[in-house]
Structure formats: structure tokens, C-alpha cells
Amino acid sequence: MAANNILRVGESATVILTDAAYLAHAQRTAGYSAGTALQELFNKVAKQSGLMSSGLAQFIADFQAEDIDDTLTPAEVASYLRTAILSQIDSVNSATTDLEGIVELATSAEAQALTNALLALTPSTLNAAFMGTNQLLATNGYQKYPGGKIEQWGKALLPSGTGDNYQSITFPIPFPTECFQVQPTVEGNIQRFDDTVSSASLTTTGCRIYSIRTTSGLSVAWKAIGH
Image (cartoon, rainbow, N blue to C red; front, side):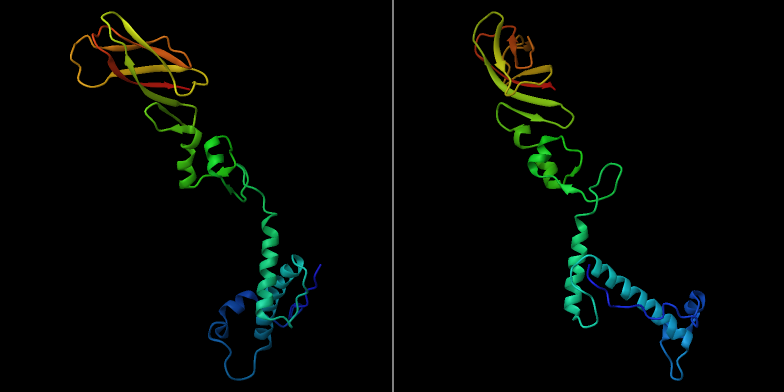
């Protein structure tokens, strides 16, 4: 351990102002006046300043390798202080839900994983959390949300015919657990009242979209919700 040679002044002084008397003393705020210096005032000033300088020097000596004495330059003192402070940063506890400490920032990949409870999100990584493998912005795409909800969407073209027609669709990604519903909507101008559509045979990977009747191919947009 490095040595601390910045020693306290007046640590055992007995002729010294009390804290209350020092607080009220006019020369504490106005500075020393001409004449004989008061022993008890000087001892109080020396003791307080010596305590703080020696305490700071002890911290520097404890947490870096160089001895601390009054031959150092201000730049050297500042450099040693910086080294001592940095040596203690890694020893600070990591923050938890019950303990204050250092919090690491999540990377975009860690934010997208939606699993780590000990990493902090910035506005940028919060935005990234909804992207990557959690999102596909395309005609047939999907969006995953924190909490497990997944929305998927796409388009399908039903075949021509005059009976009950359907088109099987496959979701862009399988739902891990369940598809709650699929909402199909006819696109474009509906020329006939019976150009309506519905969904059926829902699975985690796809469904069927039916039209009651149409005499020409019917373009349908659909949205699926599940988890």
C-alpha cells in the first residue's frame, strides 16, 4: 500500500473553538483581521483543513500505488486521484430490483430478446426492441410485442368460382402457442353484396379464408392476432 505523508494539523489541539463558536466567529467569514492571531481560531482552521486534506490523501494512497507527499505537483495529485477513483468503480455492486448500483445498457440484440431484467433501455434500444427478429415490415409481415402478443398480416387472392371458395394461407411465422383470430377484409370496390369473406380452420401456422360467392378472383387483406 502507498504511504500517505499528508498529515493532519492540530488533531490533538485543546485550545480550539467549538463548532458553534467557529460558526459564529466573525473572522470565519470575513477572514483574519490585523493584529495577533487567535490561537483557538487558527487551531480550528488548521484542524478542519488538515482533516480533509489528509483524508483525501489517504484515499488516494489506499487505492493506487504511488506515495502521497508534499513534493508532488498538482497534476500528479490529480492523476493519482483519478486512478484511485477508477479503481473503485468496478467494485460497485450491479443494480438489482432491491439494490442500488451500476446499471449496464442493453445492446440492440439484448433489447430485442426481451428477456434480461437487469439491463437498461435507452430510447434508441427501446425502439430497437420492436425491430430485428421481432418485426417484418412487408406485405406479408408481423410484429412481436413485449408480453407475448403477436400481430401478423398479409394478402390473399381467392380463386374464381360461383360456390364457396377458399384460399389456404400460411402465416409469415408460426404462433408459438395459439392464433386467437383472423380478420379478413375484401380489398377494392365491392361490386356484389355477397362478396363477403370469413376465416376458418385456424391453426398456429395458418388458416383458410372463405368467400360466400364470387364470380371473379377476390383480393383479401387479413390480420391475425395470437401469442
